[in-house]
Amino acid sequence: MGSLPFPHHRLGHVPVQISPLEESHLPQLMQVQKQAYVGLPVLEPVEFFQNRQQLAPQGCLVALAGNRVAGYLVSYPWDDGLPPALGELLDALPEPGRHWFVHDCAVSPEWHGRGVAQRLLAATVAAARRQGLGSLRLVSLAGAVRFWQRHGFQDVTPTPRLQTKLAGYGAGARLMQRRILAEPGPSA
Image 1 (spheres, rainbow, N blue to C red):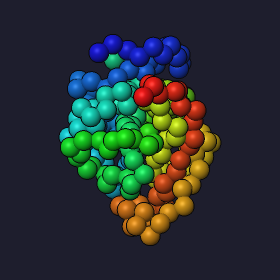
Image 2 (cartoon, helix red, strand yellow; image 1 turned 30 degrees about the horizontal axis):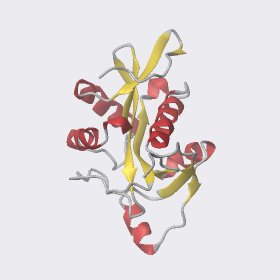
Image 3 (cartoon, rainbow, N blue to C red; image 1 turned 90 degrees about the vertical axis):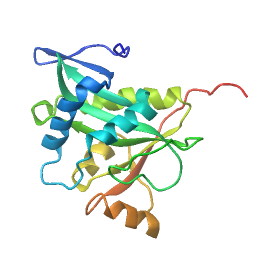
């Protein structure tokens, strides 16, 4: 699969390109995940990434610096129900999707502060708009809340069931949402 129509971005002297996730990226993606979540109980198995790539390839992206994975973002359409558990393999995605769910976004520490996550998020917003969805949702880990707030995400008021679900993501995890302008869907 070729690269998405996003421009190369210069970070230092190495161009970063946003591309669809491919099987060959998975070993490096797993390393980025391990580096990004040191000490946190949120690591997901390679089967999770394969599952989501099969179900929603348009939402599974990598930021490539040359042939190295600098970061990744995994997202897919989701309904108003509870977010999926970490590592949960799905047989299918809910239809119709009501939100674009950002399940995971991680950047290699050597690429922090250089706009990689913002570029991945911009590509994800574009994917959600193409699907006609008007909002993004995600579960923010406690340490990332301010990052997501800077990018337009706001807390969703948790129900008791949601609070129980969020506990699986670690202390201080929050469900957050960002409204976006959706592209008009196909006529019925």
